Image (cartoon, rainbow, N blue to C red; front, side, top):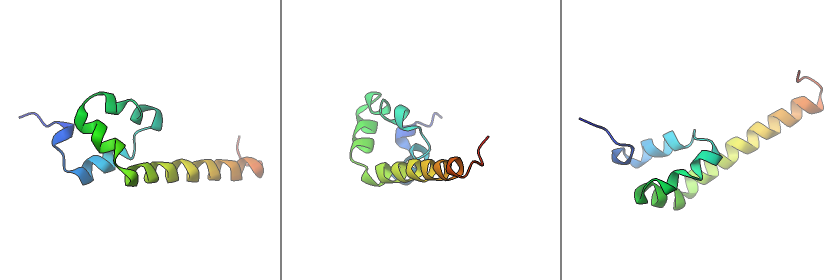
Amino acid sequence: MACYLTQLPSEILHNILAYVEPKDLSVLPQTCQYLNAFIKDNSALHREIYYKILVKETVVAYFVAWGRMG
């Protein structure tokens, strides 16, 4: 039996998509109407990805500022 991404519960799909790179997430809605609606209307997913990027950039900037990055 095949398992499709669109058949997963929304909480699990959210957790999977939270690890997708933003550039890839921007084209994923073009694959089907379900993913288009899920991603477009999911402000919690957008917020989570935004904070991951913000934290990552902040940490990198901190280490660069202190000369600890190679």
